[in-house]
Each structure stands twice: as C-alpha cells, then as structure tokens.
Image 1 (tube, rainbow, N blue to C red):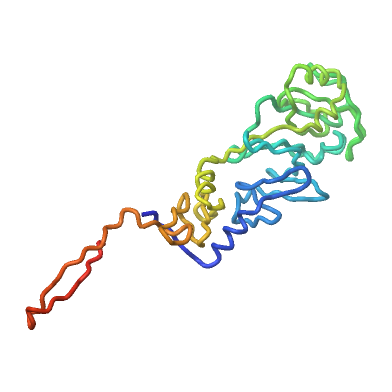
Image 2: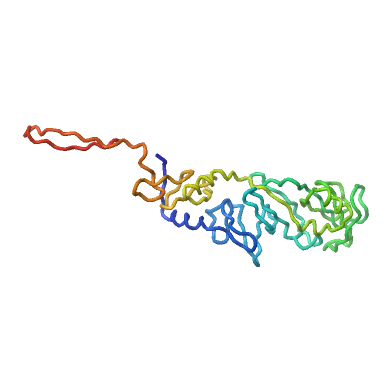
Amino acid sequence: MINMTQSQGKDDLHSDCSNLFNCGNIQGVGYPFWGGNRPKSCGRLALQLACEDNTASITISNVKYKVLDFYPSKEVLQIVRDDFSTGICSPNFTNTVLDPALFSMDNGYSYYTFFYGCPSLPPLNVPSPLLCTISGTDNKNVYVANGTTAGLENCFKSVVVPLPTSQTLFSQFLNNSGLAEIVQQGFGVRLGEDSAACRGCANSKGACGYDISKNTMVCYCPDGSSGSAKCAAPAAGGPQGQPSSEGQQECKAMKIPLVSSPNIWLNVTFHGG
C-alpha cells in the first residue's frame, strides 16, 4: 500500500499546479518552474518565471534574463542577459554565474570576458576595441577575450558573458562583425532537475510541485493527497488517488454456536489486517 498524507488545500494545489506558464512565445511551461498562475508550491523557489510586456524572464544569481525559447524535450532554456538584449553598452557589471544544482551550460557555448573603459590595447591577443560610453570613466574602449580572463588592471570594469563557440560566429566575433547580434542570440542552459519523478507523477494523474521543507519534488493528487512519488491507482468504485485495496487479505466468515443455545449459530465475519 502507498502511504499518503492529506491536508486541507492540497486539492487546490493539484488544480493550481496543473496550470502551465504562458507568456508570449513561451508556452506550456510546468514543473520545475513557477510564476504567473502557478504558485510557489508548484516549482523550485529559484526558478520563478515572470511575464512583462508579453516577454518571459527569469532571474539567476541576481542577473535578469529574457527567455527566448524553451525546448521541453531537451530541457533547455535559451536565455539572454536583459542588459545585453539590446546591445553591449549598458552592462550590469555582475558576472553570469549558474547554480550547478539548477543549470549547466548547454553544448556549444563558453564564457567570454568583456572589458570596459580600457585606456589602450591590452597585452592580450584580442580583437580591436569597440567603443562604449560608460558612466564613471572617460575611456570608451571595450575589449572581448575568450574565457574568464583576468589581468587587465587598467580597464574600468569587466563582466563575464556566455557566447556561442561555433567557428563561423567566432570568426565574426574576432572581427567585431555583428558582435551585438551574436550576443543577442543568448545562450542555452540545461536544467539540472531530474524529470523522471515528475513524469511518473503526471502519468498517475498527479501534478508536480515542490516541498521546500523537504527540498524535494512532491506529487499532488486529485483527491487532495500528497506525499508519494505518484498517485495511487483508484480502487474499484473509489476516487482517483486513494490507495488501492490490492494486497489486502480477503474477508473470511465462520459460524460460532451460542453456548446457551447450541442449536442457534451466529455468522461472524473476520477482516484480514
């Protein structure tokens, strides 16, 4: 028998967590995300999606990203830093950092360092500079180097941003040709959440959610129960989600004579425990 717990309001969570997040071209997003018409109990706390001006966004490690696309079969989000979504000259100087428990970089991308406010060509094999006016410095030179490069002490500030690593794009990048367009394509991040448990819950008519106190996925069932990896198959004539009667001992009946009246018998039924 599957152990289940039941508490007030869980039937509402089944309904709420059956909803999907929809915003602009981002449609049908469920667990492990929450946001919109999906309350916090429906996803990982750090995976909140927002919808502004018909554009989906997510904040990762204090950096806001626009969600460009979502590939459920590959469990990949295509995102771009909000500060780089229209160009490279208005950066928020916070490096792109991915929580390995939640995301990993998708194949085909690597980190690059953008150096701002550099007075002259740095002692590195980097392309010729771009020009950006940055508050706090009169120097406008911007250099981009592969990797999380350090050592440009003369530059005002730097920020690490993922970019595609294909040879074609890299060639354009070396010539600073279309760099802004390359940046605006964003990069892919792969979800670190194991989706197998949620598939099992969904296949049993449940809705996936997240138990913050136990730091684990929880399956909300139509009858209001939760606590198991999936909802129990309905017993014959019983509601969906209730534990089935499979495995229970069948009832047995026997006759016991009354001592005071040996010709009168009682029918007694014993239920297996």
